Image (cartoon, rainbow, N blue to C red; front, side, top):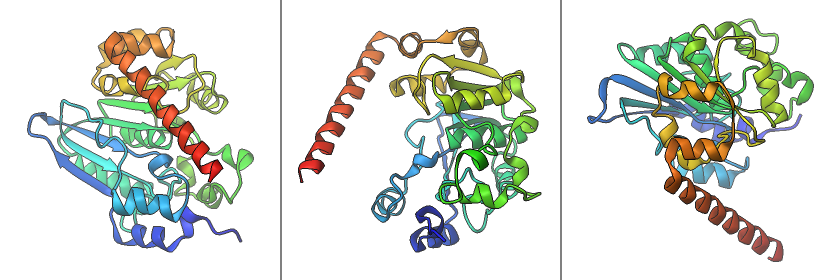
Length: 287
């Protein structure tokens, strides 16, 4: 049987056993009644190696969204699934299931108005938990709306927990989010229509009354310039409504949300990052 780093490696197992893998912080400048909850995606470390895991989790204690926060919130909760399996086994040995996470998050958010955020697998989690716990606003950036199709499209060596729990009465029931989206008006789903995987996810809940922001691009995850992300998560339903009525161009969307100067800076940053990646990749090849 093939052993998978993110499931079987002793570093991952010990961290899953000994650490909670969530973090709570407070900001006195925020509204005392508002809490934001952020879910990390499978990109929490990459690739699946000891070096990447050590750098991101053990050394940096990385949580996605840590520097991209909802400004109005006074309480911020960050979660990560170090097994990178859609939070099926929760986040730790103590919180080892979706039901256990629901109980944890219910306690942590009690008395607050909540905003839930995530992309890809984190978007799946934000949609699921945000609806179960009746969030005021839920942001899912190309989050999966179902993972059951992976039984046909993937393999146990890639997505072991999906295959393990597909017929499990307690865990397999979360493989489709259709029946859990009880607050569709509060669920903002950002979808890249030209990405086959993301378009398939959109089709799964297309007939539901979710607030879908469609983008004519192939980019998985954030379907617009990441420099605009901070601005986007500050928007309320009134601000977001116009973008649900059309197919959005990622560049035009960024300009409308962040302005020309911020967008130009974002484009430059993307260019610099791509150039650095190109140089590093070529240095590795030569070495």
